[in-house]
Image (cartoon, rainbow, N blue to C red; front, top):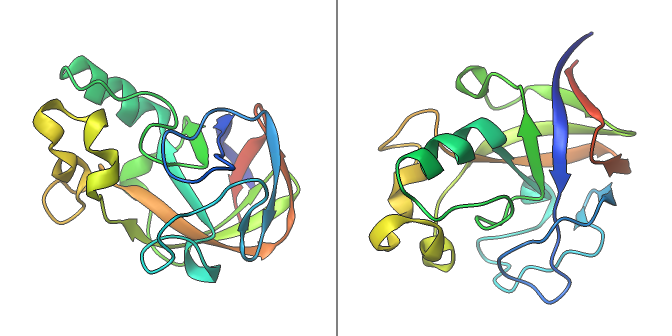
Length: 155
């Protein structure tokens, strides 16, 4: 295994929705992130979408484009720094903190995150339109605690 990135922030919202403020640490469980709630379980949460990840570098690049995005405003549970976002593929497994996660699929943007984008255009992070800019959903293979500063390593 080799170190690939760092957990910049662990984010959750016990009331549901966005933004998801930093919480320092949380348990990643097969059913989701402890202390985080999803309001629409048809499109969010569940075993295949237990954790949502996004790149700190992509957030910074979007801010440079003028978008009012910030950590947690697009609903990601883990904001990751240093991971080669363009190389992510479904099925890849990562050790993060005490947990193991498996990437499932890019996360489709929805209207709830529109405030993070100029003119509400959340399609800016739609994988079909802008390859490599999407958030990712992951399942949890091994439950465990994750905290800011933990490494994320490809298995």
